[in-house]
Amino acid sequence: MAASFGFELPSELSAKEPPERRGLLRDQVRLLVVKRRTGAVVHSRFDRLSDFLTPGDLLVFNSSRTIPASLSGWIGSDDVRVEVRLAEHLPDGSWLALPLFRADYNSQRRLRPGCIIDFGRGLRAEVEGSDSTNSHLWKMRFSTSGTELLDLIYRLGEPIRYEYAAAPWDLDFYQNVYSSEPGSAEMPSAGRAFTWKTLLRLGRQGVRVAYLTLHTGLSSYMDEELDRKHPASEEEYFVSEETAEKIRGARQTGGRVIAIGTTVVRALESAAEECGVVQPGHRYTRLTIKSGSPLRVTDGILTGLHEPLASHLDLLSAFLPSARIREAYEEAIRLRYLWHEFGDLNLIV
Image (cartoon, rainbow, N blue to C red; front, side):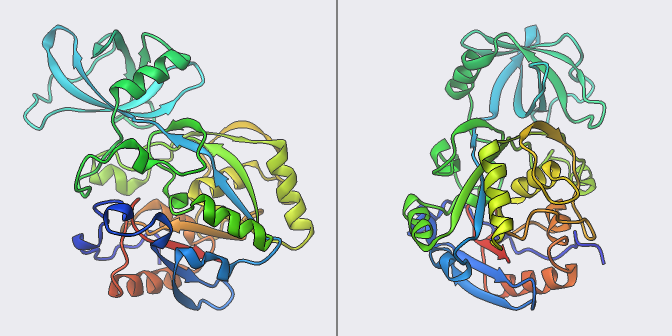
């Protein structure tokens, strides 16, 4: 059975607002725990995460900070409105982006190389062509770069928002408390429930932490057929020498390496040699992890609950048999767990 299985997700189980707007603290979301060794399922709450960790365990976080990656612009003299969702910053300084037009826009008047999109405040982008691996994405080059571009993105942009969200929530709701490096189009949401109080408590327990950076792309291309194919995007990541050393130390002393999110799993396994040694560095990865993929570094994962047929379910099947994942998800649905970035969490250890 394929891990990216289909199941019926009732619409009311989509978390439409942040926990803070549901009368909860960040760390009071529910926690579905699945034991890798036995397959046992435990229902808990995130503020009791320490019950499932031991001294010497190492939590590895993605320090990437969410940018307001949805920009509203107009195409040249046509005065055609377009939403541009930034997907990936390329090594040559350009960006891959997803353009979205109104439903009544004439599909024959598509973007073409040379088009200029005006976002206001002096910010423009020239369309250079469509992406060779995903025709929904277009390569664009902005009229400025570096910190000046980032500043304008923060002034002009909004967080990417999907239809299940009840309101256009402020960017602060899409940030993890420890995030520091701007660059993610969408929040690396597995770490959202952590607070400084939680991290301090875990530190006193002997649980250690480390950070890497992987700037996340888009979770959806607004095309159900394409989304089901799970096109693998190339993502930029950075692992420091300090983090690589902490991972080596945890493995040498018998501690577990637990990834906070699927992005961290991809980065760690991309950076790992066959022997399990993580090499520091700044690289790009298209690594796909699925059932049967060797996990050279990662012993566990904290992640959100993923949608039917999502590629993240394939990644989870490297930790657990897909049948066990399905059973746990069916139980989560029965007990009314909440999905998406403001929802509940799943720990697999």
